[in-house]
Length: 506
Image (cartoon, rainbow, N blue to C red; front, side, top):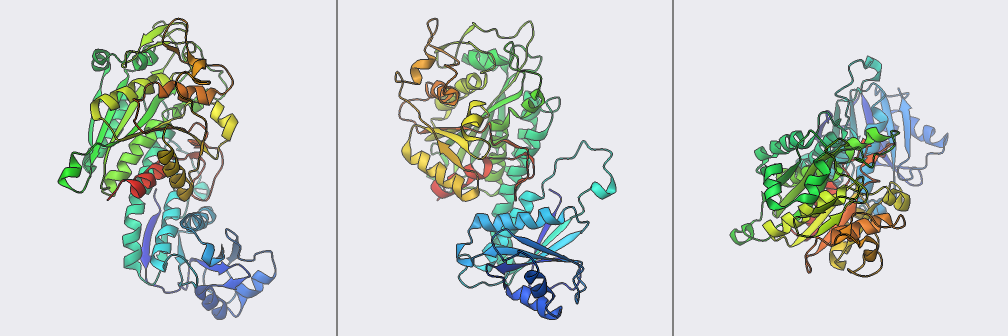
């Protein structure tokens, strides 16, 4: 994230690129009106010549406008000011950066005016514009060595001008820490599997120590002593040693709170998934570098919470393994014993994520007695068939927790959709019963995401609020959105940060 964000008092720049607002009905904002008068009506005439009406998300670009020395003027449609939500403001900020990135402009100034009927005061709106700009400016191009100068991003700075820049700067401070957590997740998910594997991912997580996060990892010998046969079985075909990553943030504000039960976030961290002996088709297998997306989100979330000094206790657990075919690999038909003591018949070695999560879920409950658990995993292709790439699948044993996560996801643009979850012994759950063991790791082809969640639920203690987020369809994007450039999305960091901020911080 190289774009520099600054806040300044209002003063229309005489040169460079400037973004100003226009409301629905072609109504110019105060800053836009000032520019229009200076330019002898250039902006008004431009609006009349096209389809730009000021609807939310529309952008009209004027290059070297007559009557002004500015290189570019962007008229940004904000729609009806009374309807402007935080997410809309972020999208507008991101859209400005996206539009400017390939123009050769080194900087852009966004003017934030006082607007009648706006829900948020100017300083808060300015912070949201800045957050969107920060999120959209992300790039992962560290391995590109022959980029032509004209193809390199030219935008280096975004200046947000607002009546109270100090207040905007304060409002942006915590947003920026969350954006840094999102960027960390995107980096981890984007790295190739020869760079990110269990031990190197642990090394990346240890960078959080400087933020006050306690980080440790269990190796295979330690996990073997704990009886983690499910997790170890997944990694036994790889030359890379499996790991269990444990991160703790104790940020509760009071002495009593310091000892309170933490929230637990558990992430699937399969750093590369060939499918094992049940090997995947070659086409698209390179994408399986991001099968550790759940772990990436967990690490990024811990960075966000520690960065903004969240007043809450959270433990992050990541089950890390590499699923490879070899002479030592797990075979279909093998039976493993999980840390919980439950036995699992491995029908398909490509259903490995639920195996590593099973032991991680058991560990976090025995070790930390959390008051609630949320796990994240790129668990099933079936969730993409069901929901596409816009929503993550939500499975939950607690209506209150489900409602909280749904609300948090909606507010930050990371939506989730709740799917069925049955009690043990009921339909769906019966599909994973095994004749040879306590359960098998796959059910029927139908309802694959549901039976995967049913499997995980068997490792959650009765009475513990728990949610499972299947993020297979949302971890990676093949197209740009206003605040998410194509590639690793970081989906889940903002959702869980908002869930925690809204429901668990005091």
